[in-house]
Each structure stands twice: as structure tokens, then as C-alpha cells.
Length: 379
Ligand SMILES: [Zn+2]
Ligand SMILES: [Zn+2]
Image 1 (tube, protein in one colour):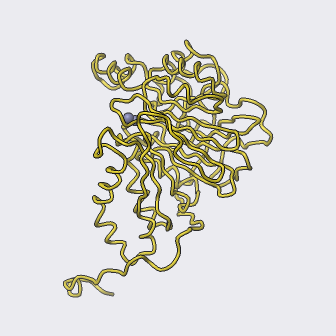
Image 2: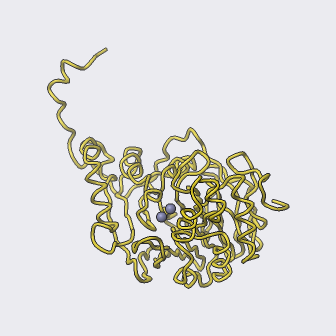
Image 3: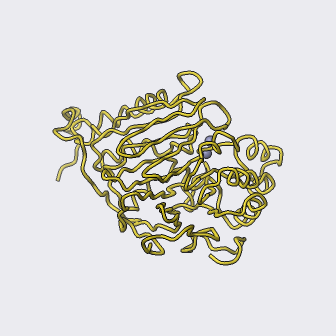
């Protein structure tokens, strides 16, 4: 992209192949990346991380922006893939990338706001029917008391979907429709995952109540920090030591938010500065964190927001910054951080890869109710 980001800038949803940034490449990449990443077209090399924004938007899910979600893939032997948050609409973008449904087994939640968890039922029960046989591991914050934590959330969502689970008796996917939950502390940094060369640590952030965290993923000397939802805070900046990519939530300034949302300025002020991070403050965070590339995320991206947001951020920081949209992709290597756009196959069928879990279905199908014999139309 040349020139400035303003109300005339074309957006990805409108067909633009340019990202919302002045600096799509930091460093000198060793290989040539196509301008647009086609579904399933590119294998990662050893030592590489790829971050795909599956949901860039806010709670008001829309065709141009799914709600909060990132996919992080690493170039290890296992081709590990991790979801960070899974807001509504994120899985439509994931499925369109034509990546294996069998790889959807690891989810890290930043907190339990609905816009960060809306696609969990689809991941659990519908992707199990589409070919996933392994259970889903879920990491999420503990609450100040039991019912507010990730474990209680998982138990209740499983209980709420009892009919779906029972209806899967006899279906080979039933083994994939289970959650294995690990709570992470909300009040101190912790290492929460260490496998196959990947380390994921959590750190506390400040968002409305205790029970919100951010995450850092490290693999092969490369790293990504993800804020979840937060006000600007020191634990996040401290977690960014030497980081390659920082993805940080950003809201429009209170004035822009009040006008767009049609709410009084005092309420906008409470939402933007009392629970989230304004463009000027995210610039301060970026300056303190010093990541090779920084990205704003969880921002309503439209023609009225992007110009003021970018220029207000610029009052505090002049390093490489991207406004992320759905399907913004970052490839991170030792040599470079590159951002571009992925495209999706809107008609994709599931791609099924290998599972660890094999064997017959966990349980036998139910006998059909007696009344069906008379009620069923037959050919
Ligand atoms: Zn949110
Ligand atoms: Zn939130």
C-alpha cells in the first residue's frame, strides 16, 4: 500500500489485495511469498510461524468481520495448529482455508466473553461429525471462584449439548466431541503448554473482571504475543521481550465509537477506555513492547474508523503496524515478518487428516422410537 490510510482506502472484504499497513514486509524474506495465499497452497518450512486472523471484529458479528479468533500454525514435524479464541464466524474462515478438521484439537481462550467463544459448539459437535476423532483440549482462565472459570464453562456447554452428544451414539465422531479442560491462572504469568518444540505462556491482563489473560507462543526462536481483550497494561508489555509479532486489541477512540454506535460519549468513554485500548494507547503499548511487527485487532474496520485509528496510533508510535482484517496472514521467520491476505474456498468440504483416536464408535446407536414405524414415509 502506498500513501496514507483514510476513508477512501479499499478494504479486504471489498476485494483489496493490499493490507492496511505501510510496511507489509519487515526484513528480507528468504523465499518469495505469493501476494495472496490460496487455500491449502503453502506448507510452512521448519522454524516458521504463520498467524491467520480468523476473526478480526467485535461482538457484532458480520459478513465483513467474524468475531475474535486467531489461528497460529508452526513448522514443526507435527504441523501443530492452535486456535486463540474462537468467536462466531471464525470457523467459516478456517474451513475455507481447506486445512484439516482433524487438526482442530487445541484451543486457548483469553476470556469467556461470548464474542471469543461463540464457535465452540460448532468446533465440538459439528467438526466432530465432519471428521475429527480426537477430543479438543481447551485452555482458559480460572475465575475468581469456580463458576466463573473455564472448567465450569466447559462443563456447562457440554451439559447444554447433551442432546447432540446423545444423538452421536453410533457415530464414529463421538470421540471427537469431548473437551479436556486446563485452567490457567488469572493473576500471574504461567507456562501452560510445552510440546514438540512449542511453548505457550499466559499472563494476566486487565479486562472488566479477574479472569482475562493474554498468551505468548514461542517456537524455534520466533514468537507471537496475543493480548485477548485488555486495557493497556504492564504485564503484556513485559511479556513482549524480543517478540516478533504483537497482536493487540484496539477500539476506535471514544468520539468515533459514540458517533458510529449511536451511544452517549460517556458510555463510549467507559467502553473504550474502561475496558479496552484506544488507538493512542495502543501506540504507547507498541512503543513499549518493541515487536518487529505490531497489529491492531478486535477493531471495527470500515471507512469511518481506519483513518482516525491509524493516525491516532501514529501520534505515539512510528514502527511497522498493520490494521488486521479477517484473513490477514503473517508469516514469521528469522529473516522477516511478512503480512498479506489469504483467500478462502466458500464452497469447501472438510479436509480430513490423521487422528490419534481409532477403533469403533464409542457407543451403539439408539433404537428408533416405536412411533416412527407408522410415521416414516418410505419410497
Ligand atoms: Zn472481545
Ligand atoms: Zn472481552
